[in-house]
Image (cartoon, rainbow, N blue to C red):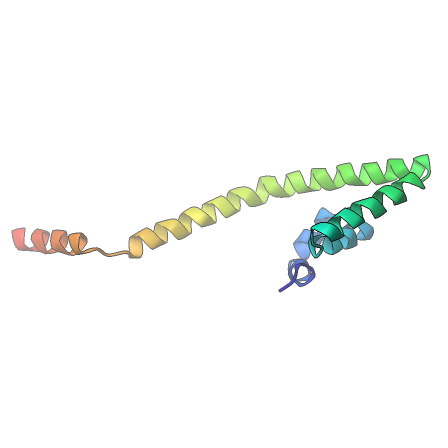
Length: 112
């Protein structure tokens, strides 16, 4: 599954991008290799150079808004992911039966 398919399969992530253009740029950026990303930044810089002051301010405001959305998203999602990881680790530990566990159980039964 590529990045675009992944994002499309999780529509809640779309809300992290204030504009459609930012969303499309992100999807494009994620699919680029290092050289492609360098070219992308050069294109973006050239695009910024020809923007009017109002457009530049709007672009900056969108960037700030996107960062705020990401922070709010992270405040909710990171604890969920950490809890899920702990639960998975705990279930793995619980499912591992060792010979020592079996011996202890047998000794407990024998001592009754």
